[in-house]
Image 1 (cartoon, rainbow, N blue to C red):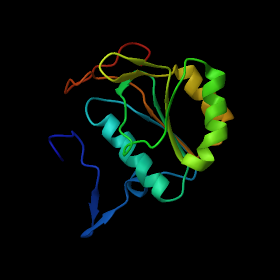
Image 2: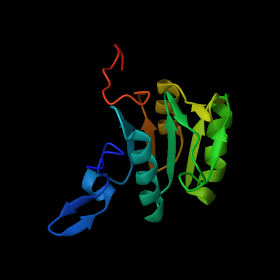
Image 3: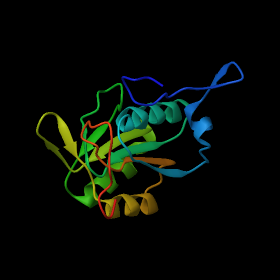
Length: 151
């Protein structure tokens, strides 16, 4: 375990490293919600990069707030407050970008405000991405997270 990141993103098996997606047992099409304290954003973008390297299409988002990703973490960022425009953009550009991060708005300190859980569910039903990875709760940098009712 890496104490700086809170989670070890590489699994060792019989003396060799195995891919994160394989270690998690991901199937061909998955919606993945990341919860808990520490490491969610790092895990989200690391897993997305691995899936894109395998030729998969990935949308990353949050239902809380995240720091705006660097171009290395996500080559395409689309921020818009209108559901329809987000859906249109993903439908039109996911094939060429392979990985899109989306959020509703930019807020203080280079952060992004995410989408609603209902929108994420609808996006999964409508859009043609192979993987939707969602940072689904916020620990605000604290080492322990106790979920609120409804989380």
